[in-house]
Length: 136
Image (cartoon, rainbow, N blue to C red; front, side, top):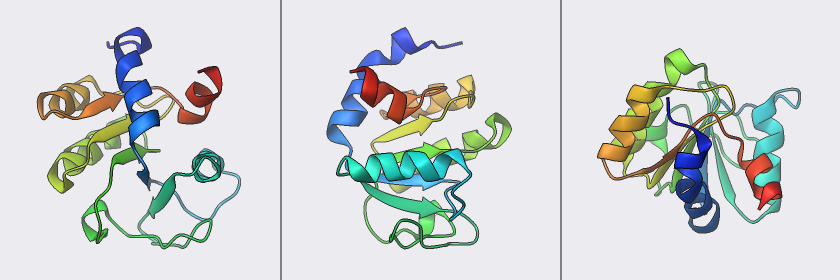
């Protein structure tokens, strides 16, 4: 399994260079972790794009039911889904031309990690951008 030490350069690159964050699993539910992380990213100048089957507007940003429906370029796909479901979003990130994939705390898929890296994307997993931002 890949550990954070091996992903440090990708973490730093994503936080410094990615402005548009498609957040898979983000709905308008303040009790969910995605809601707080999205707000944190937005407060740091990042554009958030909610991706959820209900396509809700969250923190003032239009939601989309899928990554493929987003009508503009996305820098990073940030995944708040169970590990078993996360790999498909790494594959979709590759398909839409994203630069990076970020799997949140507890989300691990070594196969998806390898596919994303092999496709030239920056990739991290089992990491929270809010925690990493604060520890820099």
